[in-house]
Length: 620
Image 1 (tube, helix red, strand yellow):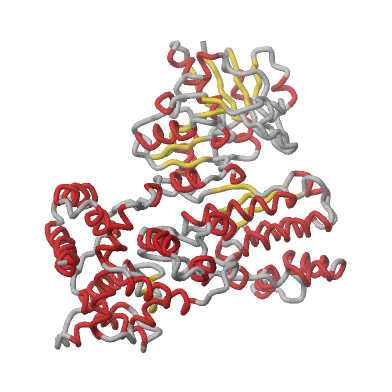
Image 2 (cartoon, one colour; image 1 turned 90 degrees about the vertical axis):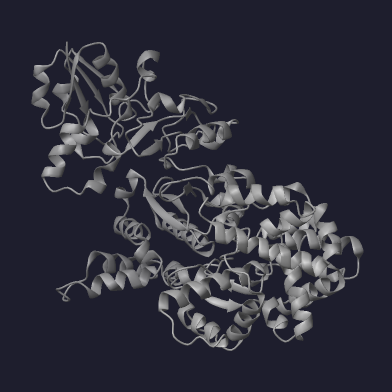
């Protein structure tokens, strides 16, 4: 039997995604020995086939009426049936997709000059649903067939080992109680992966945030902010997510659904403002009804502004529209963006005044993040710290309380509390960075190394920090750490090359290559950062290096005190701390180094052993 497959969305509008159901149908019938081919140039080709399978995802996709009247045609998809219609037979639903179905189409597109990147969904991804179902029943969403999320397919069912990436199309992955088992299976493939539908931010937890930020995720993490009524929960969950992520996350922002008037546009702007403040990218999703609006052009320009990061991150909405006008060749008339802005501002000046001049770089509280050498990427939720009584205000107010000081030592050396926390605009602690630094100096001076190690032995197991190649030092000279702090005190704007030259000059070395100077300064800056004396926002191009609040006070101490404190601060290095609390066990140290470092890292292993011997020597 000759079977024709028609992806109606592809025929009518073009689409960047293959139709998964059609690929499964093709795979099943090819295995049965039938001839199966994608019809993608003309509906007139369907006369050559005994049976036709046609599907569409979008209701607005047009299909000729005479095609739908054919007796040998089977139709399906959310474009015809809001709930997707009848499920595919089990043997087809769980058949491996035929990833070759679109090959001819892809080849034609490439020959016509289309960029390969726009066709990667057809060429590079294994695609499937690991779970199905969602409990939310959102009015605008087609996924209403099921009341809960459940396991649908094992990863190997749709995995093509020759394809480099995985594409999960799950409806609501976090709604499935055993999501972590599936994530383990995804990671076991070793392939970068992505969730096409995004993830439900409202269900975010510390565990989920930590797991996903340690995976080989491809592309942006995408969530959704569909309703302004959920602002408090969204704000809380973004901050929870940002605790573990330094990347700008993206959130779908639905508009034009409930209404298509100025109130809906104001509602959309308010969500954009919130996302700006919390260091996130909106991705405007216009419901089809926006086309009915008097302010149709405003919806279009909002999407053009927000959905292009290079504009959203650098320009306000007003600046974006003015830039469009500036680049217009004929200045005798206004471009569509500029005119849309003017028309809306004329009708609703109060909305324009409130939102048109907002800029990401001015609004975001995450313009500066923790950076290198910290356990987390950003500050925790203040309400969580207060609930656990882990906040700086509480700890410093109870100075002298032995139990609080013991708790602080465990928090500080395990990096559960950070000196940078109060630098954020939304920090609720009122103590200054100087007060925090003075308290740390007080603790370091009061407790011996033996005291510190004994207290750290009782640390909560949840405080454990992963030992990685990145947090194992590559250098050992603590005098150079002190020199870095001193240099940075008087050089606020400095790069690694200049810093390296100044460090080498202290050793009488005046002529070295820039690459060597840069590497030398980077390695010692990393060590100083692990000791909380320096802040490095990132290691690499356009790095910003500065003295920490602790480093500023440390620099003015006498040499004996500096030497004493810097050795104690070595306990902030995970591999050193783990060795010390295990009574300096050689076997545990070797195990940690062998897991974290490659076999050719002999010098690095010797360096960390030298640091540990410095610590042991100071104890003795």
